[in-house]
Image 1: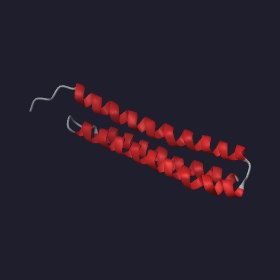
Image 2: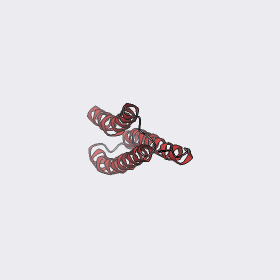
Image 3: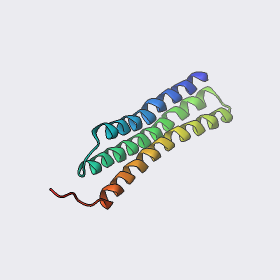
Image 4: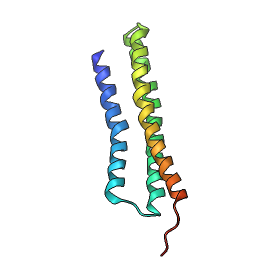
Length: 113
């Protein structure tokens, strides 16, 4: 049963945290100008919704396998709590950053040519 904890932690560290850190790194590296900000905002929003969709699919895939192997529901509830924490916090942070970038774009004055 400890293997499933490792799998869940590894899966969400790769799928949840890495895209967020990569996008933040690219944003800091390229320092987008006026029209690049909504592009980065769109990337953040797409990655956040994609990870959110994958995490809900991952919960549907893992749950029947755990129920078959372990009739005790306390372990299943523990796994669901870990999946919900990892699967919904990081996509929410990624979506929030994308929305904030888009709001920053809307509030900026258009630069003169």
